[in-house]
Length: 88
Image 1: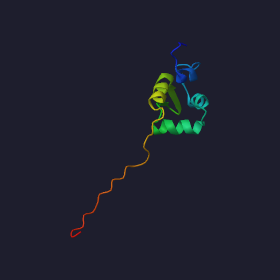
Image 2: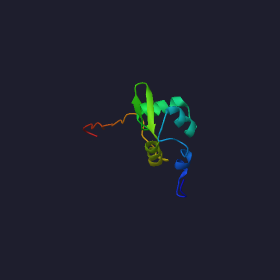
Image 3: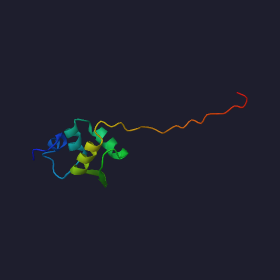
Image 4: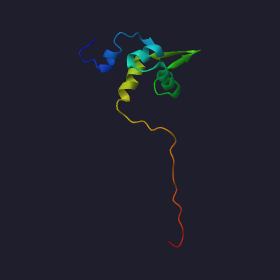
């Protein structure tokens, strides 16, 4: 590992090029259910092969770096159109 390795590189230092949801959950300290939800919702990259998920470690690291401390909107966007009442 080089001196310029960041925390994410160190977190995944011993990981092979591809990992599964179980290892992602262990490395990030979250439940497997959370990882499956993130995969299903497209929050983290993954490839479903039959019933199994495959995560490319470098792709996951890039997404984690890009999303650090960024708020992502949830739910639908609601646009309210004002009603103009004549005579006011």
